[in-house]
Image (tube, rainbow, N blue to C red; front, top):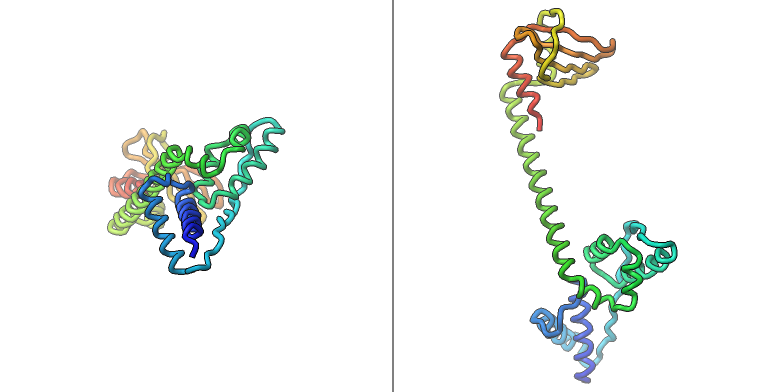
Length: 243
């Protein structure tokens, strides 16, 4: 067996594995690179014996998402688009492709670095990429936490309504059962209720004994006052606490 050929194949395999994992190749002096090289060397020796394959780095598929238009002169854009497409085919990691596309919006950035090997370029960008990935992770975690919080708040709100036996239909029935009075100037809105073909907006008024109802139904828009009932007001305020 040609040990040199085995060594070269292991180096190529280690570089490829680390490139596909991180989007760049760590220094050959690093513990991570050395560990991956040794693993690939043993694997190749056990698998192929004296027949070593020619290791080829598979071309990465270009991003399926439409790429944003590069900024620059028409000539810079044409040249930059061509270079960018070629670069992206050499980057197997989707996250790294997204990072480069987002952080390099000017055609000149791609043109000026056209002669720099992709692996070298990504190595230079590693600190920015790590920061970008950290911020994306933090943003995703914050969004997830916010969604979980909203879900919990919604569940708690529905539980309160259920325990108090408050429903939109029930509130409208209470309004309909109330005696009607002449309208008074409105102040604070208490609740917004929709049922079937009716939409009711209920307000407090300058008269402490009255509530104002602005209703829209199949007949059109109309408003009227009803007697203020503290039980109804409490139910309306709880209903209006929807997250």
